[in-house]
Length: 120
Image (cartoon, rainbow, N blue to C red; front, side):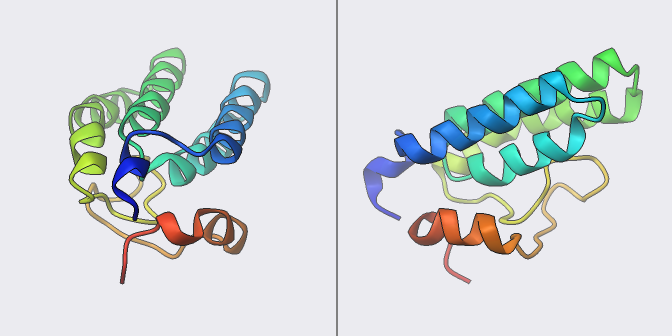
């Protein structure tokens, strides 16, 4: 990953993250859009943290205590993890996955992220 890319999200990816966050705000079930936003945001500290903040808000709105606590923890580690390139690629960001669990990226997101993904 190019050094500068940890700080500045490419415009086309930032637009996709914003689109997913908007879908999460307007949809009946925000989690699938938030998970996609999370997958897109992981390589960039601020975007990654911003998505976890949105997840925290939804957990609070839904009164989901387990998800709320999980998001508090993730908020503390998301930015530093992205900066250090130590994030679990493919992790949806939810408490349904362990904090360090990795998974395959959906094909469309893997194509979009291309050179910004961590080496296997």
